[in-house]
Length: 159
Image 1 (cartoon, rainbow, N blue to C red):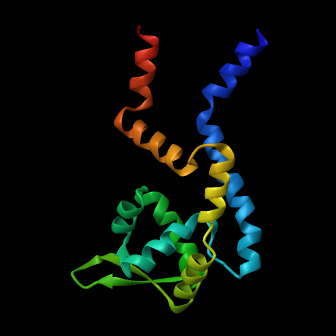
Image 2 (tube, helix red, strand yellow):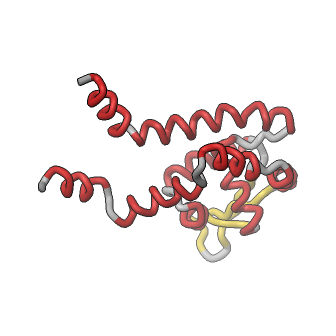
């Protein structure tokens, strides 16, 4: 009986495991960044990378490019502004719309992030696991977007 309960617990809380993985990675990256002089908040690195590529972007552009909600991206911007990593200006075509771009300090931090990429570290972890971690997570996200958990739940419980 205990084994079925353990299976229930393990299998029913995959979202918690994914969240725990994200939090553990964030915690373990922090000392690496500290040693390299990287001040970009771990969970905001994608914004810095995107602004380096795009040169400038609105909140809506960033949300779309990063495949994140407007609200989530918007929550991260004030800290990046306070750290003087990004700046904002009014869109010349729409005064309500703000355009974000990297400051000189932000460009320097983006260069540090690029120079000290964790790609090989994650590749090594994937090899240890015997699965491409990025691909597994991306595939899971893609599959859930194609068919949500409610549909999957109904298939299982309405047989």
